Amino acid sequence: MNFYEEFQKYREIFIKDLQGLLKIPSVLTEFNPNNPHPFGDGIHDALEYMLNLGKRDGFEVKNVDNYAGHIEVGEGEEILGILCHLDVVPTGDGWIYPPFGAEIHDGKIYARGALDDKGPTMCSYYALKMLVDLGVKFNKRIRIILGTDEESGWRGLKYYLTKEPMPDVGFAPDANFPLIYGEKGILTGEFSGKVSQDGLYKFNFGERTNVVPDKATAVIDGKFKDDFQKFLKEHNYSGSVKELDNGLIEVTVNGKSAHAMEPEKGLNAGFVLVEFLHEVTNNKLVHFIYQYLSFDTRLTKANLDYTHEVMGDLTCNVGVCSYEDEEVKLLLNFRYPLDTDVENMTKVLTEKGNKYGLTYTVLSDSKPHYVDPKSELVQTLHKAYIKYTNDTETPIMTIGGGTYARSFKNAVAFGPEFPNKEALIHQPNEYAILEDLYLATAIYAEAIYNLTR
Image (cartoon, rainbow, N blue to C red; front, side):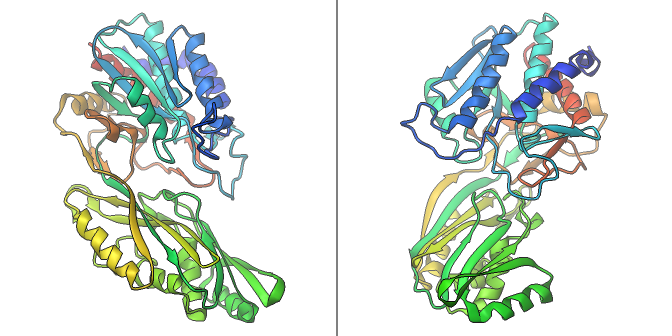
């Protein structure tokens, strides 16, 4: 069976359903466990949208207390889990088309979530729908698990797994093709404390730890206005100055956002501003960032540049900074490979922070995830990819990103990004090539079919 050819009859309804999902602004605004919609109305609307599609097409669906849900078909004791999420990161600035417009231009559909992860969720859904419409019988139960909080803390999936069994085997359509069999550990650390102003009255950048911040602002003495403008011009940076009361100014710089797993692909606006601030203030927070973190995604300045022959380098994204009324909150996102000495890293960062009056705390730590590349799961998925691409050259790999696969014993990340294609995940103008989504749907259908014989 050629599932790519079979899918062609679904193209119009697929696009319609995908646009409907992409138009829902499913960004986390606030987590409130006392609210009937704990992750907000937008994420809840996206969950209900997918569950209603499942009802429309005759699947069994379940909403798990508005924390997550699943769409199910099949029989048997074992469960094949397809691990998706419906929440998206904030849109940021700089979009050509409306970030929730789901507009199609030149064969591309533009929207936040087009690739991460609403587009792949719809591909998975239509892969399963197509198999059911063909009358395929399965020897497992197949569940498309709909997560709601993947970009912020995984509280939805964690709650789901307290109510529902863990799948026996699975894949997350939330990364790259051909296949991801290993994911780095993900650790969030915080520097906090009380630091005297010493010429800096406010300093803020970033919204999420897993996004390189593209804007930073600071309030300083107005006498530095000309120096700041000269700094921007000399370094060809983008920024602005706003005059405030009491002889103060607010300075703003612009950077470039990127995913925290590859922070070197962005330009951290906080680092840009620190480059200026460390010359005009004596603020300890600024000098700490400059000394140990600024423009150093591998932590070589702190002698914490761990690496691994398979998983590659440790990376660090300084994602969020809040400094106001002398109170510091500085959040870092680490992606670390196997064999990283996390205990030593914590010790070193604690010592470095203490020198500047800062306390270091590990807020969360998700250990590295690894599945044997010779396993039946990996081999079956890889063959499905090769069948529809004839690509035997691109190797299966490990990544610094974190997908739902790491929450399951026997799961890997599988697509939807094809090799050598631009992917603006977590950036302005995120889009998906429609033909790539069609091809991914066929690959997922092949994979599901072969995993349930």
